[in-house]
Image 1 (cartoon, each protein chain N blue to C red):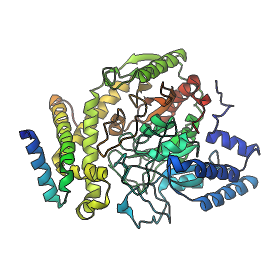
Image 2: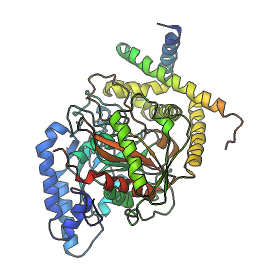
Image 3: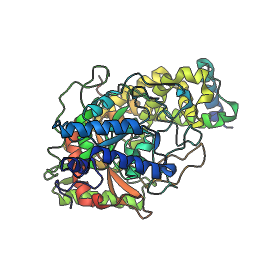
Image 4: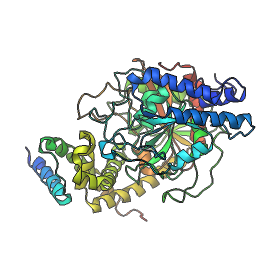
Length: 464
Length: 58
């Protein structure tokens, strides 16, 4: 069992310890990351752009600051990377789209500022489905990311490069975005921890929007502690994001090891138990998670929610309507510059009437209240995020529907975390999802840490 | 093509015309199929709202 004193191998936590014990410098960690990317990314394609010179300069600055006694905290000198819909001043934000050709960001996204102020070292920008929706596509400017556990399988999306970069061991931390599961899906299929915080917890300023009512920013990470540490840095009010919540940011790491003894964990079984897409492997991962929670002193109870399809339908409609509004001008004038999948998914939003969008927002409010009521007797819920391990790569522009159950919590804004739960029979990662009441990230992180510790995931070697 | 398919196609083409979107004819069938899913989702939303009529609201 991994204790607090034994950081997960390859984690930011382990790197931070090495930096402070003089076992490594940030420059060495950064050069190692760059070497690993150079060696492997020709087949993985996690990165769309690498800023080696900028990373080395930032690493040297971090080393100099630490040497001078200026300790900025646990992310100082730690390599990280971001999905290429986040702005970095002076660099293109490509959104993996020809439509963005010529775009250069004039300022940093809010969370990039926060991470760099904490001394983290930006390595580069990661693959994304086109504008965080159009994928998996094979007709975009750069090749799509492959799953490092098996390059013949999908990474999940749309934060595809973020999931792949963690699984490949390039960086311990990556930022993704999650509108209907785009952090948690790639995390689940790539064996990363993926945290979608409460709506409003993390600023979205400087991040290309997909659907403003549903968009969330958050980390994918090698370990639960890394996700907590990252959230600690990026959470907080930003007056420039109208949806940003002005409320205090609690300490996300101090309670991580306190377990779940005495807690109640709800399981919305009607969401998934009758779904034919639920694999035996995934069913066993859920059962094992329940058993591990029970062994850790938690009580498991069933909770009732409206059908999963109601949440999914509402979220998909809101996303289609709002995404269309964002891309309307380019769909009129430059439709041919989009990839086939993005063009189709954005354009069909034109057919959703404003009154229908308003109905969906009304249902969103109603469903949020129902979930809050269901969560009232619990500290968190346990659900699958993926009903099966990563499928083989799609071969057409009409990819099959992926068996993911992520969008309910985008709709309701509740925090949700994907936690690895071992490898399935095909050698691909399995995962479960924990969902908590609004603003309860510290609790879901605590639950996730119990599963991480007791499942032995920290001891599973990364594939490369 | 069923009547429902034809109605779905008409609704989508009307929307494209209204918005000034020149969608490629060769890819229209795929767009109509995806749009039919959205219309199905709208039915689910309306049914759920109708089922909760009389409940509290903001």
